Figure 1 (cartoon, one colour):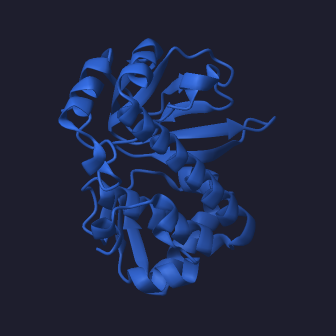
Figure 2 (spheres, one colour; figure 1 turned 90 degrees about the vertical axis):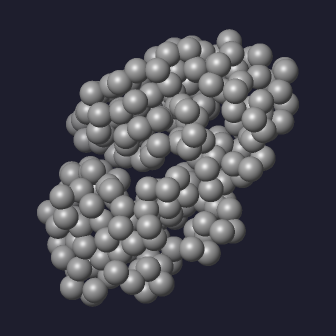
Length: 241
């Protein structure tokens, strides 16, 4: 099923069987996209929203010198640009990090869902509000935390999101991002990322190797990074795992 992971661990039980069938029928195109490919460029008109079936994607902004700042990292089960439905233009770029499988949902089909399935429409709205909650937390992370806390906080967020969709056992999870990607996420240099990874490893909190992260002491990492997963709106059974 294309939408197997949509809202999994976050109100998935509120989706009816008919809702899921509606989403499956709404997906106009399902395709494979290569890694490091830009799907949408800032200012582009969009007529469909992208749902991530497999892989990792990001949203980002470039400064005048072409330096990139990641503003979101998406995992399977995420609608990457559902907000493009009412906005019509995006104020940022969207790209793949890894090779990805995506489903394109035409905005015309979303028009029908808004009218015919108000319960599903509310859950799609909830999905966009999750993005807003994460943006607020990213602002906090970049504005108030130091470098090692920023990096650790990001790892905590990714672990929790991946745990919700069954891709983390609570400690070990895939994160196929380079040190440059992590630097562009945390607003530091790649050299600094290397130092902070060593710091976290030497504290006995986590280590990262070959695109896999293992958190050795999740409660201690949460304390260090001031991480509270409440903003992710996880189901209780996931949040307490």
